Image (cartoon, rainbow, N blue to C red; front, side, top):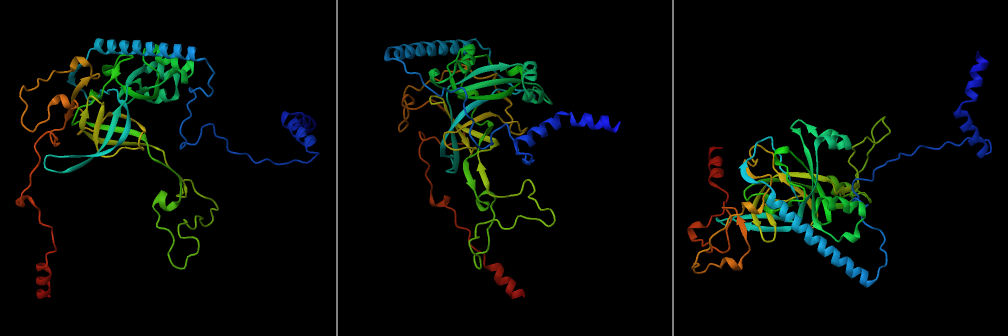
Length: 402
């Protein structure tokens, strides 16, 4: 029995592999340490667009002109189809149940600018641009559940079945992208987009495929949630990354900004999560409860009170705030369309000192904001606040009692 066991072991594939190693290394076994292999790139690197062509084929000027003409015609047809889809959509200003989830917008962070209240207060706002947003794809919960691992977690959650609505932003030249990437936009009847974003939407708030999305999807005074990548700071030390105070100033040599000892008694290892120097920033972050105080309809720009993640020019996902106190109770369902636009009558004789409306952008303001077309705020001496100084009487009384 022992002899048969030895024979079976020596004839196993593991022994054959070991014999090959011995013959290759001249009879000596060399140990190779296993390296940790990861199939996903590091999270702080920007995603590589695989749909972007890496090489351009040299074409003649005549062919290039013909392609530009075809692309222009296709863009015109796509815009006509999108406008037709927006007019065909059945929308209305209705009550939004707490269980409903509307689609969001893909916006670009332009910068920050202060706004002023009627009392003279200063509000620092972030300017977000809605750049040519269209609905590119709509995936049902069943299809999403079967297609991806993310769909298995999000298609049927505690809020019920959710549709995945893909929104594209910023039109781009289709010749710079592969045919596989262009097909999804051809099916939707919209131009090729640079950025795509996905939102969870309930069945009662589903938009139409190819429908354009306007900045008036949100209302002035509404609270929104912004999600995006934070500013990329690169590799930073422990003091900048984690706020450490550093080593003592005196009696220290070449170690003022170093983190110092990282060991522990008996463990002989670095525990996961140890605060050490490394890459800082470019992580997903969500900021909720941001108020919209102003919307420029002509330029498709929104003024949001406060700051949002990301650097200038970064794309963010903007959606309705889900906090119960700040949730949108009534608004356009499923989204805003030109059929909801109301015609405002202009006064025949404008007031003195007021700029005519034809020289201004079409905008909506929060009631608490000061409009620069209104008369200036005038303060008197009675409005001036006296600086709060130190009350020395209490100190004198304390001394007397003591």
